[in-house]
Amino acid sequence: MKNKFKYSLLYSLACIGALSLLLSISEIQNNETGTYQIATMSDSAILYRLDTRTGDIVRIKKSNIPKVDIYKK
Image (cartoon, rainbow, N blue to C red; front, side, top):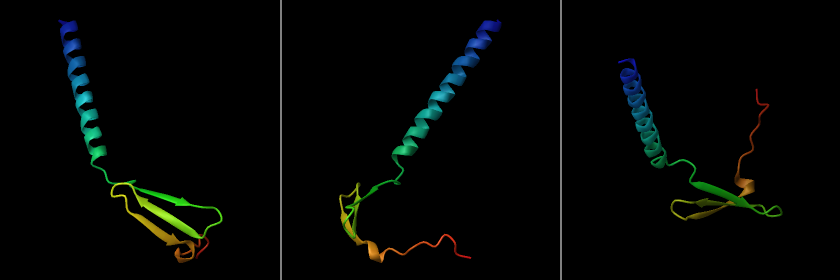
């Protein structure tokens, strides 16, 4: 009797765990973050941003990017 309860509890928890893993995988596939890649050349003053989902390439001048002041009070 104890073994039957133990195995049924074990199998039910295993099914719940497998179901939660499958649901988390499906949420990751619908996530739209991380679709950009940035490339530059060391002597160039230009960045290239690639949208990996659409394939659009945008040219960005480094001088147009605002500087971040981490010591700002």
